[in-house]
Image 1 (spheres, protein in one colour):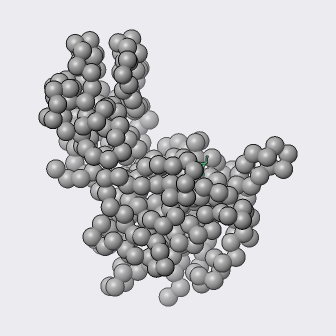
Image 2 (tube, helix red, strand yellow; image 1 turned 180 degrees about the vertical axis):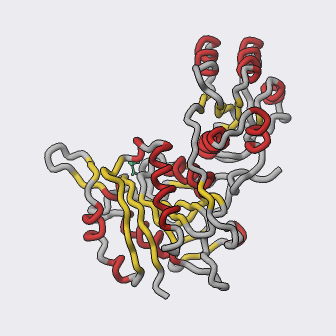
Image 3 (tube, rainbow, N blue to C red; image 1 turned 90 degrees about the vertical axis):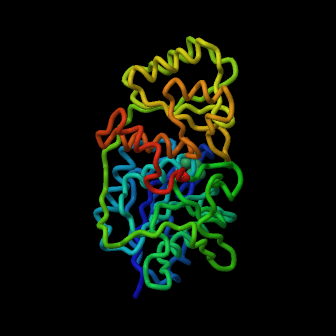
Length: 343
Ligand code: ASP
């Protein structure tokens, strides 16, 4: 049967053209995108599209946009075999992470892609990325189930788990990577799926979409020389419920009494603080150094090997669904959809 794919075009470089007056890139109409990729017709799929009006640079992405994307998927879930989301690269990993938490019991492919060069340019990577994303969205396994049943990022010659991915290059075509998880597929002459790494869901469970997201969360990046005033200012930002604290190495932070005291007070105020390493690869191990141990004793929770993007959006999701206190702590320390390695 002819695969049916829905493209959701949000914006980003993939759909950009040069403004003839200023020379800078600006978003353009989706119909232009299809004109530029006549090869899409050759796939023989039934392809429909929905587009953001106006398309946006992904630097403008917000939880409301994630809700819009989730709505477009949920409203059309039964009508299509797979979904391709065209998105700017800058915040793609945040969107992929957020959607993975919002789309529960997902049993169809949500393939997010974009490009480093606009699709209208001769050397564009957008054409290949779009075509490969469509093929993956249409791919079936031996028993006929969708090959990919999760939110994934297709970029250049790899397919990555969405909630494990990070944008790693502003210049290279291979712009994404999951530093703590193997790739889901390698794209060469063929598409070589890494089946053990793919999530397999029970299609009997109907899709459940959780739209609620709590925006009162933030990221604090530690740096040598951070002052008590700065730290307290950030930790006690009004209304903040959850903080992703990006620490050094295996989850280490300054051991000065003023630092420990400020973090302890923030935890006691009810804020949930999740310790995530600034390193791309590896995990938080609070027990490894005194500097990590002292931080853990304040009430800060280990985020183990979760990315900043997944940690932040997971917090938005958990507070959004109405959890608080111990409820958030319990849920944040266990993998919900493959975003962290189980203990
Ligand atoms: N600034 C663009 C965006 O994220 C970059 C890109 O698409 O690669 O929308």
